[in-house]
Length: 423
Image 1: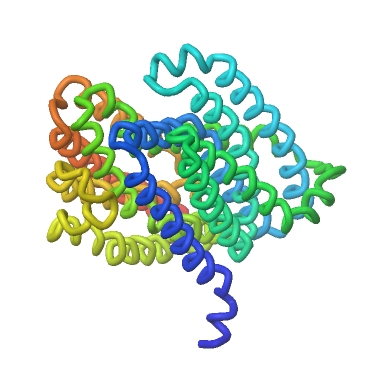
Image 2: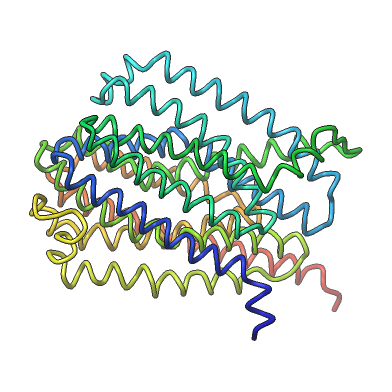
């Protein structure tokens, strides 16, 4: 037992560290919900929604990097790993720098289109660059199973966002100060994340590999981009569009419910990190991958499921604790949004599993779900409760489709295995 605990010490710490980071992160949300006016808090929620959408390249970078790094490590292909780090570190810095510059230059038109302060759009561009580089580092830590450092980076980011953001708001900077703190936190955590990777970057500086892997890596990054872009849109587009399809008071109430829902959605994020690494490693070695998936699904049902159930049983109590009494209309929205967040949290595990195995057809499913959700939000939504019902309906349907995709893929895999087995 003690040997097993030591062998999995990094994974255990990652789970604990992610919990601490989530507590600090939601402490930030809780405090901001009280320090800012509801209308300003809705702006902050919209900013974070846009940040997640525009920084999807960062999520692609982390997941794809983790999968490839775990694959090279599992096969003991150090030369390929060093060449991958050298090649993609240059590409990623150049790509995210270009995207960030474009956002800064277009901050005026973008701020008008999204009804956001112009300076916050500039911060979005800066955050994109920092997040892109940071998540490449996190992807390496994840793929190489350096979970101890990875968890510490997450704590540093959440703690810095809380301290710096609250400090700027208390100095009178308002919603701009709140988001400035979030941007600064990404930069601080990036500096911390580079420490354990310095040796790898030095080894990769002059690396060469005889077999050219760049084309395969590029294709995998592209497919991962489709999958993760669709997932990010599916879980954030409602928060972004809420200020456009709802009246200001309804948008504020919906923002309060979104804050509660994110607890359910992001609490098991470390489980997804572990599942992707475990699945990638086992798949590269030709070992079964389903056991880690079922364990992850069960864990999230028990943990996030308990929170979602609590929102159904006592929504007024939890709304008062998390966002305060100035969001009374959020009480009716919280149960629906909590269940939707649970379905999307489970969907996130399915996505990590499919990426770990290199099965990217799920991207088509997610893209269709996004299109349906946007169409319903624009055509049907009339109040905050109707928005929550749309999100819940799409989340349940997508969850069922992901399970169907798993069954189909496993049936095909068994069929191919059976066809190759001599009788």
